[in-house]
Amino acid sequence: MLGSIGRTAFWLLLTLAALAGVGEAAAKDLPVAINFGLMADGKDVGCGAPLANLGVAHLQAKLHEARFYIYGVKLIDAKGIRTPVALAQNEWQYGDVALVDFKDARGGNAPCTESNPAKNARISGTAPRRAYVGLEFSVGAPVETIIDGKPVSINHSNVETAPPPLDVAGMAWNWQAGRRFLVFEVDPPSPIVKADGSKTKTWTVHLGSTGCKGNPATGEIVSCAHENRFTVTFDRFDPKTQRVEFDLTRLFENSDLLVDKGGAVGCMSGLDDPECPAIFAALGLNLTGADGTAGKQTKPGASPVFKAGLAKLAGGKQ
Image (cartoon, rainbow, N blue to C red):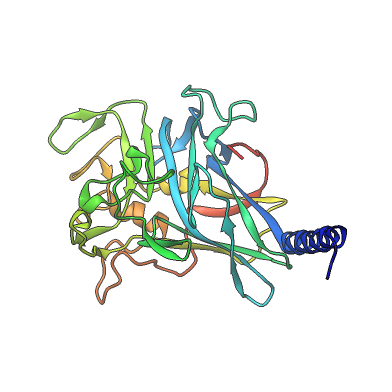
């Protein structure tokens, strides 16, 4: 039988052993931070920075909105094996979904700087500690994610009751309670002339799933004919020295930002919208196509608007 001192020592040893085990497990985790940048005409933009050389007319424009969801972040080792990153859970990250937002955290019109960062230009988490050489992630809001071992609806869920960052009203579509995966909006130097002769201020790119059926409010499973999600793969990527860059020049390269020939102003993922073919091609998506290719990625892992660049601005919330 152990005396009181012996019992105390025994439990102390057990506690120390448990803490050592926790510390050992924690030591096996590799902290992961991926920075994102927004580019136009080869320069860092974001926040309220003026944009140069945009669209077929090489216009000056002003950034109105710039944000997108990503999910399924994975690190790639030399053998090509993908390892999921466990995202930290915070106001910008929920489950395996994160929101990247390049607008000014202060609501002003100045370009992004370290003292005036974007709202969120960094994602963070952990992965098993081993050597990695590449990065992969998907753009969009997935159908569901796993929280505490249970599936949780993501894309088709109530924005008013969803946890952040899924509670952003500006990223919600009222179609089957779906979400906008990606939103870029710019204001060209003169009004946009619509097909009916009227004029408007902002040229928009809103990407999301379309052709959806089912009502999530009544518990129905929602299925969408055109998923419009895509994956970005960098076979070589070092988070310590590189960042993921989104190129606005490439996005609007074949778009006339002073004209809208029909449908929603700009491109809101409409199959018959005259402005959407150029935008979808820039994203690396099939707008239309036979044999179920509509809404699918043209080339797996490739999106012309994304590239790996050298890290410049830390920026964003951490």
